[in-house]
Image 1 (cartoon, rainbow, N blue to C red):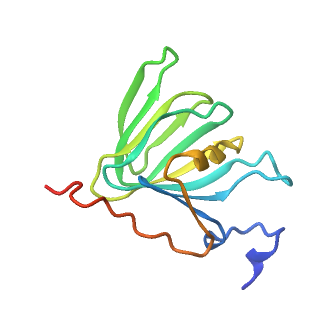
Image 2 (image 1 turned 120 degrees about the vertical axis):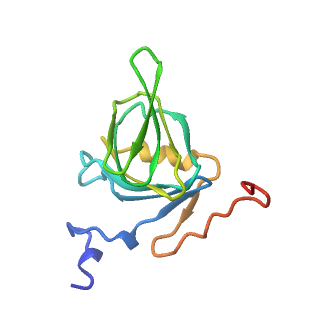
Length: 156
């Protein structure tokens, strides 16, 4: 059914029709988000962390976050109500609930990319990623360039 996902009222989502967000730690593709027609919809996307990479301590003051590890392994930190970090290893099949405003971080500790299904509810927290240093937007339908470490980095 070619063209079905091109209709604005289509319930089907086309992976190639959305921007890719690129960072030095990996990629993000948001496949759903609230908009004027359905502001209550959560944001859903796939995050890919490259080996040894991740994001530092951050929070989302207006959104809850749910992480589901699709592939790979990592270390997940979520602060408890007293602000103490709770750090756990995570791997494919694990899920992590992060309440609104709670600080957290994620690092890929494996040799292969770590893939997460990420949901923000309500939507909106994804907009802050555009302010992260090194953000690069890759237009829909284009492949992002391979992220290469600087010369000499990680050689051992």
